[in-house]
Amino acid sequence: MTHRVYLAHLSHRVDSPPVIRLDHVTKTYPKASRPSLDDVSVNIEKGEFVFFIGPSGSGKSTIIKLLLHEVTPNRGKVVVNERDVTSMRSWRIPAFRRQIGCVFQDFRLLPNRTAYENVAFALEVIGKSKGVARRVVPEVLELVGLGGKEHRYPHELSGGEQQRVAVARAFVNRPLILLADEPTGNLDPDTSIEIMRLLDRINRTGTTVVMVTHDSNIVNQMRRRVVEIESGRIVRDQPRGVYG
Amino acid sequence: MRVRYILTEVLTGLWRNVTMTIAMIITMTVSLTMLGASLLLFFQVGKMEDFFYQRVEVSVFLKADVSDDQRASIESALKSNGLVKSYEHETKEAAWKRFQEQFKDAPDLVAATKQDSLPESFRIKLKDPNKVQDFSDQFRTQEGVSDIIDQKQLLKRVFDLLGALQTLALTVAIVQGAAALLLVANTIQVAAYSKRREVAVMKLVGASNWFIQMPFVLEAVFAGLIGAILAFGGLVAAKVFFIDGSLKALTTVLLPVDWGNVWIMLPVLCGAGGLVSAITAWVTLRFYVRV
Image (cartoon, rainbow over all chains, first blue to last red; front, side):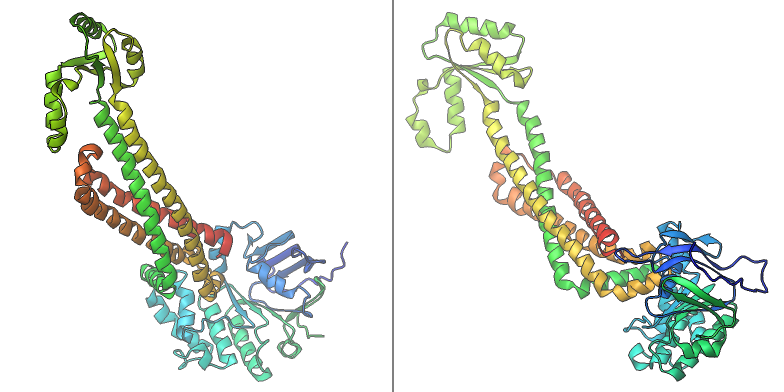
């Protein structure tokens, strides 16, 4: 029996099923000596804001990859929005990913497209018309605080602004879940706080936010649920936690 | 919008990598031209077989000193033989006339040939042109027969030559085809690499697989189709300038190449070029680049 700290999460929506459920998930990468995630179980309710923290290599980024179905677990189940991701056919993955927005430490913007075009690209490639883009993209750019900078290229924007574009792109489809993999990793503390405010605002629209970080400042300021992972195991799960 | 997006992607893709695109089109063209040529040769040989085998004769040449009795017994044997469809007797005079007619362009040859140096013969059409050996076995030993010549044997050499040409064309088609496939695979890899950021974002936001792959596949298909059209142009040019042009004198032997057969090559080559490119591109994307 593996050692696990699992604190029942007190949710005001106990009747609705969790939007994300990891059920005894073990993931070992090929050639790795020990598993990245070792028998991890965690539930995330709809509308929650959850930090996954832990040192580098603790396996916290693997959770993001599992949720995006970029990797599949060796054992256990990953259930997102009541769909078992583990057994999902590959042709269903695109439609599945449309419910999930994702931002990364390195922004992953297209350098030859403007802020507007970067966000519109996410709509166009899933078959939305240019008309939809014209209506929705300015709105979401305004929401992330980039009104007036629509036609700047990424290299003409600061790091914080680039991450805002990335957040706008992740959010433009109004996803159920927003995954953030060290979104403040490349940003200075003040800019990081601004990005966190933005993620908080998005969370308040009802979007579940899952953020992987090792930025203790931010975790301590936000006072949200903290799940700490060490060597692939959950060692702490606190409703209003600090970095510790 | 999707159509326009994909078309733009295809054209920019082809242009970005224009040297590779040209190489791809050239190898495709050579390969498909050879494929088309070998198919046309195949049709042609079939047509010639039909045409000539219905007309081939077996000639039974008689000895110069053949007696009337011997001739009559050969003729009656021919008449009653089950293999023979029809026969004709060619006298020395008739053979001489025919010789004069055939070689009227070479009067020296005609002048040098004596009238009675040409043997008389029976010209036989068999019910089944493939039973020459049986026929020959039965008549070779007849008194007065000097030689039995099967025209089919002569034709066979022509067909062997055409068959060899066909094999050669097919070999070039396959070798060039393999080169074309490798170029397609390489082009797709280069294209996928140069668009790796876009592809990563598309996968992240949930663009469908076909939407991600389509521009790459169409890039290859486009090159395949251009190659097919150029190859078709090459075959048309070969017919106009070569077969109906400088080789016109040979059409009595080789028979004219029908325009109908040439036209069929357009859809055949487009189909082959497009399909093979598409499959190669898709396989490259699916199993190698893992787009």
